[in-house]
Image (cartoon, rainbow, N blue to C red; front, side, top):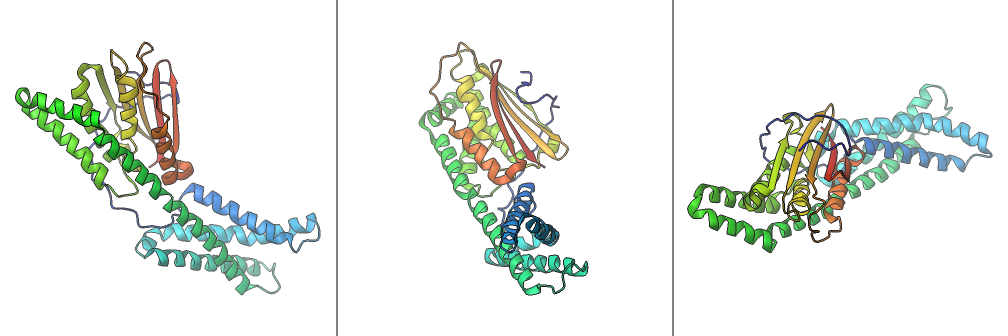
Length: 349
């Protein structure tokens, strides 16, 4: 199946991937190394400064003058806080959650002193408000840390929901029974194939039940999708045609666990099952600089009998969890064109 031009135009190179073990769970309660965090932090501090300066301004001109002066300290201080929090990321991850938050607040106080010292060194302040600057920096950083911690905690319910949904999919009667019946039918004729089929099913159960990390590698997700499609290949035989175009350089990209499998399951459910002639499924990955592009495509027969309608819950869950992990650096698109439905995901390397 040729790659659909729904969302982008490029040629993928077919490469083989080697499955990797899932990494250990992330212990950092807040991450300041993301583009979205930097943008929100700068916007938040500038908004807070603009509101506070209003209280001492007699008119708009005086407000703008004071705002420019305070911004000269607040903006560098904010960038220093982000730089320190990002550069000390590995060190902070070794601390307990409460100590990580305290360290973030202390870094904010230091950043406030830096901003105040910058204005004082330039001769723009007659009397430097050191104490007030430190307290202001600590207060603003405390708010930022609290928001980042709450956002990190927001990953937990989404990940739990996804894990439960995938577990239900794994034990869904028709899937489980069809897999077991296929294995029984192969026991005498093709015992090795039956053994592989049961091993794939066991791996699916084990992965859904044991993976606790906030993120895993793309190679892990590809390996899981390959096991799932191997099971469905036995069930549908020639009705399902699977094509892989995998870039080994993209294997290290981080994804929320159980993100890719629902997409290939949707491709089987809405592409293969309702079509008498089956469907073609194509999974491709490609590294483009510091971005990895992932595509899952499946043909949709116009004459196929309609399957049970879904509500887009799987796609919504994928989009939400991708946003929680990568913020503005993660992109999700999907669309149907010329009989091909395609999901396109972009994540940072």
